[in-house]
Length: 449
Image 1 (cartoon, rainbow, N blue to C red):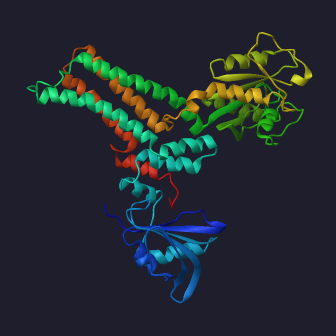
Image 2: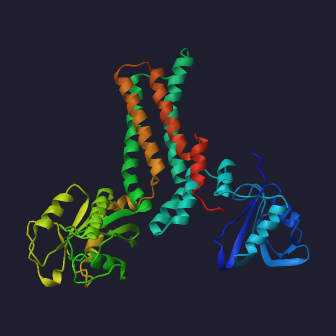
Image 3: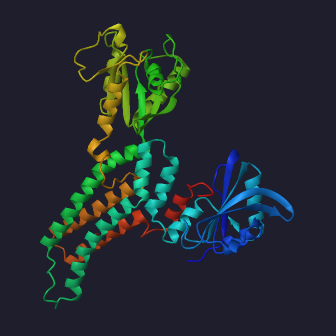
């Protein structure tokens, strides 16, 4: 596959020590050699670094270090050079301008990674893992991304496709070569056994994917309660900073306050909400409506009650409102005593103001969302929403195949569903793909990646 030569800035422009300009394509070395003054890059060996100057005719633009990676031993598998220049807004742009003038083309978002994929250097899951690495905010997110980059998901998909091919090939041999005496007659009973084993594997993968998805995407967590129970104090206590204004005046929080909290590798996307109560205040009414909207989208609800007082009608209404959500009931202000109904046995007592009981709250979040044996497992964990959806779709195709077996359909009809399952798995790695999907995925990358 032959492409033109592209160039892009791989680092964020701004005042910094270093910027990196990347150029990739058959003519990359030749184009750069025309503005580089130092050793002759056309004679350079792969994986070498060269000191020199970037010159615009007789004017020096910058002193640089150039790294040379020759095809096929580069990220894109093409001839690639990386120019390390001084940071700032001007220098890298000037170098790009000069390379464009000599025949390179400005890269589109994610085009370097896209070329690595199209040239067979990486599969689609590995390309997506690169974006996950860039966006990682916790060590657990980075760990998952690295495992995917090393090809664990790709290997898992290949294993599943291989088992499907065994069943498909068995059907084909029976149809095309019935005279083979040593061929196993592919009966529905054999197919049912093979399909059920595959579905059991997909079941386990989907169970583990719940933990993987939580680690990768975080937990959308809404803090709710009536006014003045300490919701904002809880937010500040978790963040260890004064993110929200805390006063003795009820209804201080009128709008949603959002923040992110790294809980031992799990990213909590915290939303502190307006206290829910009857009110005639127009602004407060809008805040309460936003609270109810946030509740409907939450993965986790932290329901805060004031345990120093008996439960009110508003508290009971909140308990009813959140009963169908995954929630943790928190009794705040434990330092002022406990007057709450003893029937709330699963209530976690804390003092947000004094940061007492916060560790127990954190442990409960992990218990709800993270299966420790899976988190520490060396097996592949599927975490990407696209991958999970395709595995679920594969599961449905296998279910259709089982139904066809139960309905005593001919084996060649059952094969249709098995082939659909195989193709669906291929969409995960990009073995089976469409241009719209590829365009959408790589458009999310930055310009020089």
